[in-house]
Length: 70
Image 1 (tube, one colour):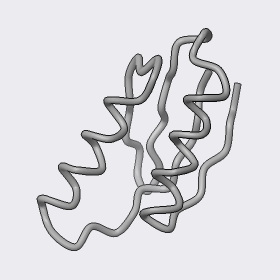
Image 2 (cartoon, helix red, strand yellow):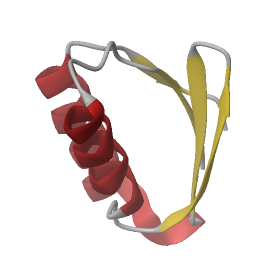
Image 3 (cartoon, rainbow, N blue to C red):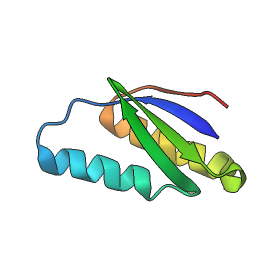
Image 4 (cartoon, helix red, strand yellow):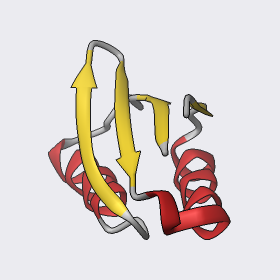
């Protein structure tokens, strides 16, 4: 599954580290690529709805949007 996420505005380096730590700890995490103001997250296909719930939680916390590409 590929997800496009708007990169949030980080208040400090620690905020950025926490964000990327949360992303890398997602269920089924495979890789992430940052391109401009978006990051492209790849999750293993078997990660399912629980991973999407986690992405929604992260997005809500940082006030950002995402969309599933594949």
